Length: 128
Image (cartoon, rainbow, N blue to C red; front, side):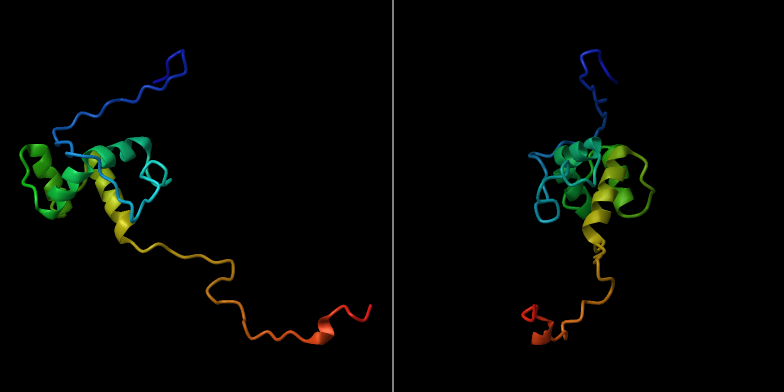
C-alpha cells in the first residue's frame, strides 16, 4: 500500500510459528543475504531471516511443534501435506534453491574451447 509520502507499507504477516532466538543466515549459499540474492522477495527474505532458525529445527525434528501451525509446517516438511502458507512456501523455495545443483552455462556451450591451437610465427605482423 502506498502513502502520499512515497513510503511503502508492507503488510505484517500473522503466524503462530515462533521467531528464532536470533536471525537466520546461510552464508554458504547466500553470502550477501537472502534479500540481496535476487532469489527471494522482500517478504520471503524477512520470513527466512526472522523464522529460519525455528523452521530449520522444526524441519529436522530437533524442535517439537507447539501449536497447529508448527505441526502443519513439520508435516509439509515431511511431505505429508502441500505447502499452503507463505512461511511454508518460502521454506520450500529455500530448500529447493540450496539442494538443487545450479546449472552452469558457458558461452562455449557444453565443450571447452580447443586448447590445442598452435601459434605460428608466420601469423606475426613482422613482415609489414
